[in-house]
Image 1 (cartoon, helix red, strand yellow):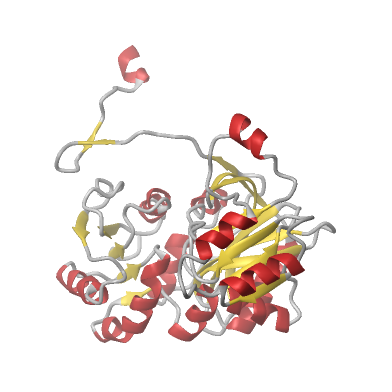
Image 2 (cartoon, one colour; image 1 turned 60 degrees about the vertical axis):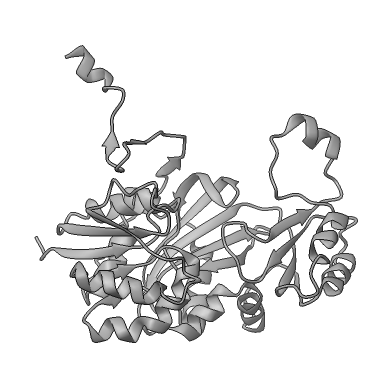
Length: 365
């Protein structure tokens, strides 16, 4: 067994926290003490960590200072952020952590800024000759409307996306073939579909808007990929997933697959953009089956736990990389799938886990 270590994981209430904690616990090499933090005092996984602390939101200037203070108090070896908005504040503050002997699992500010900006990243990849969807960049509401018209929103589906955002925030699509009547009576409501008119009304509520993308809606299969890369932009481990069921950016069903074209694209993007550490990619295939990049998540993704079930424990690999340890060679088990369903968790007034219904096998005993 390797020496124990302490990991501070942010986002203890985030959708992916449960699986990432499991990956850290059951790593097969060492005991990991987990300090979980979240701005919500009732964060969903606070009962699963060894120590739980509340922290300011990432938008608060005190956020990195508070993470550093807690890290020093709890003798943290590695800080593992899993929330997009926390990445840049921690990237900028990383030298202060390193000075105290604390590693932070986040890439440097320059490549991070590129990865976090969908417009800049897609423009970069297009300039590099890598396959992307057709898209336009817009800085005003009028430019968004012009792009929608030029790209044919009256005859095909298009996405309107904020260049910086995550978790489907700032993402809507228009589709001239959608029946509002059918959606009203036959589908549960979601916030993704909007008419062109409603999108423009929303954007024109303000004099200025964030940078936007107008992008074609590709018809093919959706793929995701998780990688860990070194400082030179070399991929140390990668895994590709095919995800047929995604709702509000949360993958409900996914399967680990052998898809060399996706893995090759990841390697090219990582090498040219000099991305490091844990990175997640989203692709969708076009009508000819060619995967095209949609976006990059420069952090662990919520479904990364599936890869651990198939043989590649990316959360733990990120910790090992931060500790200066080699990433082991893995042999992925293709065909392993995840099927997400609701599961209730109960806690008392102090956040301690409760088990209100005894397991059936204990009843039989």
